Image (cartoon, rainbow, N blue to C red; front, side):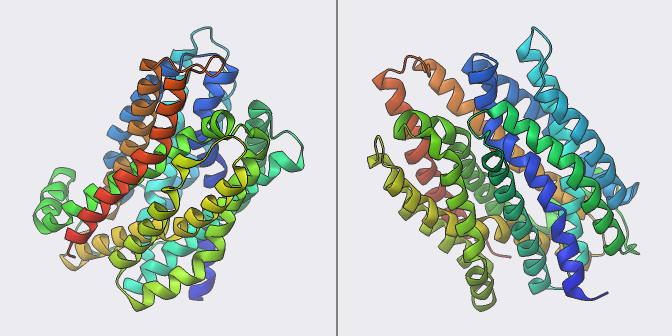
Length: 412
């Protein structure tokens, strides 16, 4: 099959994943606080616990994709359960909103893992070399960003962007149409290679990985810190625009600027990744984000134009910040093949687990701190407002700077 067709077919699956990834990542906490009326600390605790439960399953889902079930079959199964779980998540019917949020967010996250872990692992199997891994990663992230942009545009097109519940329902209905089409394209064009290599038992895989990739510890730490730095502003974005900038009507436009700039910047990062090593490209993208975001603490009411410029600059760094770490993961997975064993699913299960740890910590840390300072969207104190600003803008910068330190220490 033509490599370009396979690359495009591989990337298309990211579109519907992004449809449901964005609402869960950004809108869900705000939805349960503002629309359902659940205490901000309880939302943080429920999402943190559901993420922990989901994290435990990740390496085992990776093992299943390596040893027992074809990755494409798992992706189909995960797609079906994800749609059902997400429907119940955004239609709470129980008086116990905390328990409902915990159960159905956990089911949604686990279903998402059944799609994402084998999907990421296929990157390493389809890629033949270092540059193939990068191209597939960029293809996936291009379609991810396209999916995010569509998800942001749809509520505006239907004039329901100010209503989070209707917006979430619209995205769910769109996913019910798009998911089957994309799954068909993916299964038809992507042919898995049946590996003739030894597939190690689960715990033997962990021992082998620990022995042969001890030097990868620094990149693991950097990955967690950088993801946490990205997750915190994403979690607090709606609160920041509503309470600091006080321009909630521009929420969608600001997000569009952010993600569209990421698409525009993709050719540059692809070109740069061919000229210098991936760690330097990743550090460059982080540096751009840090410099741009350092102006955020000085913004105030109605400064949405300046914030839009900052969003454009940080968006430019997004595509590299998303694709390069995943490409490095694929390089590590391919290294396992040269050692005569196949642990790509288990490996990406652990990477997925690290990602979710970052997301869980972002919600848990920020929401608990906001609860401690008496955060209330209807009666906001100066302490709560300043805490929100610090958590949204300063903490991510510090985390990214520490991440750069560990990236520099990594040697593949």
